[in-house]
Image 1 (cartoon, rainbow, N blue to C red):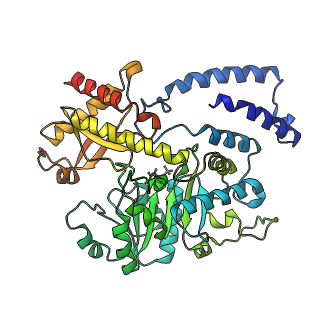
Image 2: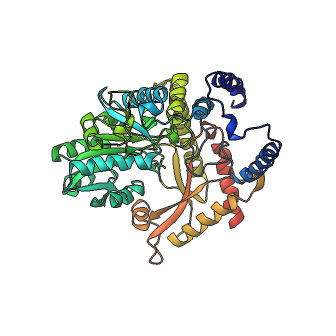
Image 3: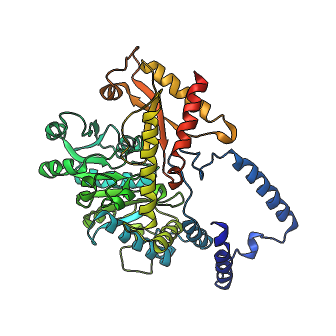
Length: 455
Ligand SMILES: *Cc1c(COP(=O)(O)O)cnc(C)c1O
C-alpha cells in the first residue's frame, strides 16, 4: 500500500513546488552529475545495509514491539517532513501545531479525560513519562515516587535524573494479600505509577482496585499506558477485563505511545494531564520570543524544545483516515492481536515440552521449555531462541524475558531452584500485528521444531 500512495506524493510535491517548499537550488540538488552518481551508489549501499533488518513487517517477527506504520501515517509524515515544521512553537509550524492540538483532544477523549485536559506529543514514551514524573515530583517534593516491579525500567532512571526518591512495590493483584496490603505499601508515596500493558508481559495492573486507595491516601496516580493505551478502545468488546479501563479517566496523568500501538512511525509519544493547571510548572522565559500568538503555545507546555511537526501530521492523518472509535481499524487490529495471543497461548499450552507462564492479558505471551530446574529452563530458552533465528526463510524471531526467580517460583512452585541464580530466562512473543492471528499455529510449529532440534 505504500506504493499505491505515491501518486498523492507526486501531487503534493507539485503543490510544494508552487509554494516554494521544494529543495532550494543552492542545496546542490541534481543535475550535478557527481551528486547523481553518489546518490546512486548510496542508494545501493543503503539497500544492501538494510538487508540486516529482521522481517519487522512479517508475522515471522514477534520479538519486540516493532511493526510497520500505517501507510497513511507514512504519507502524512513524508508530506509534512518535506516542509520540516517544528511544533515547539506555533510559529514553527502553525498548521502542524493545530493538528497536534486536535490529536491531543482525540487521544484525551479516548482515555476519558475531560475536554479541559492538557497534553502534547513527545518524541517517545520515556520523555512523556519523564514529564509526568517531573510534574509529580513538583507537586509532592517531599514524597516518593512508587512504581511496580513490572514498570518500564526507565522510571527508576528518570527518578534518578529528577533527583526524586523512588521505590519499587508489587502491584500484582494475583498475590494473595494484594488489596489488604496496598494501603500499608503506599505509605510515604506522593505518586504511584500504574502500568496498563507492561512492557515485559503485557499485563494490566489493577487500576480499578488501586485508584480508590490512592484517592483515600491523597496519592497521585500516573498511568503508564505507553504500550497498552490504545487497548482502551476494546473496553466494550468483551475481549478484556474492562474494569481498569473504565477508571483510566480518573488518573492524574497518562502516557500513551502512538508509535507503539497507534500505527505511527517512531518519534511519537504523548503525555496527558487531567488538571491543566500543572501547565504552570512548565512556565519559562525564552529570550527567543515568539511573535504570532497570545495562546499558550506547545513550547510552553513541553520539556523538549524542537519537535517534528511531521509526527503530529502523521497521527492527524491516521486518525482522520481511520477514526479512533471502538469500531475503528485501530480497535479491530488490536482485537486481532489479542486473539492471536490467545490462539498462540492455547497452542503452546497443548504442546508437550512447552509450558505457558500465564494466560495473556493483551498480545504478549511468555512461555518456556519444560525442565525440572530454573537453570535448565534458562539454558533451553536461550538455545531455542538462537535456533529459531537460524532457519533461513523459516526463521522465527522471538525474544528472551528475564524474570526474578522469586516471582517465577511464586507462579511455578514445583520448579527447583538449583543454585543461587536470582533470575530465570524464558521466551516471550509479541503478537502485535493482526497477521499474527493466522500465523500463531505456524509459530508454535516452528518453536516446537527448534525444541526438538536442540534436544
Ligand atoms: C515502551 C515503553 C516505554 C518507553 O517508551 P519509548 O517510546 O520506548 O521511549 C515506557 N513504558 C512502557 C510501559 C513501555 O512499554
